[in-house]
Image (cartoon, rainbow over all chains, first blue to last red; front, side):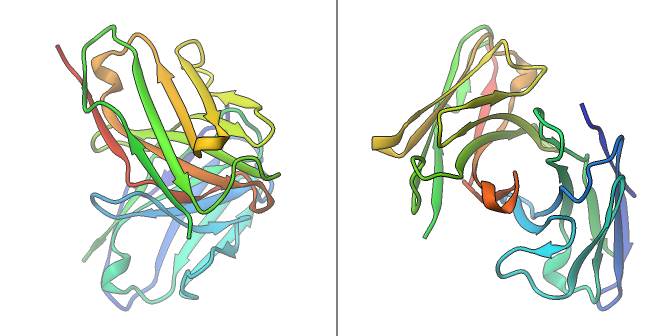
Length: 108
Length: 121
């Protein structure tokens, strides 16, 4: 089973600043990596797939990069609605499909 | 417009079997490339993938839970059913169903709102 590890667990950033979230896979997942955003009381929302492709309707301030075992989600200029929990998910080698433990992005 | 909605009991007793239904619209599970999956999330914790069924009726399960899970579909009703046997308090979680469109990879592009299941005597 591929283990996904996200860091940091909590990230405090001011509105308007850049946020960088990391996700590491225990073995290579190629570019088969997705990112999701989850707000309190809501279902997750797909942001990025294929490591760097934005899903439909996702603003350009969200970008993904990386391949193999190291991945990054960058939010270029944080808006108030971006403060949430973010999860990465690998789909290169499954079952099982596996998620990271999440990074909580909070207002500084 | 794609929508999914989970339904099932809010409370189950330990050792009972949980049956959840995902009713969806806006797509057909008989269309090549379509899949529906179940994911759960214990309160305050991370997402955990449970099971997936595809357009060809192939079924895939979590390694750790496969002995307890069964997924099935009723294409005519646009429904996917998940059963989980021998429920335990640690299975308390919000259970989500989600769609996968294989052409985008095995990612969940639409989600239901989730249903909270509490396991308690």
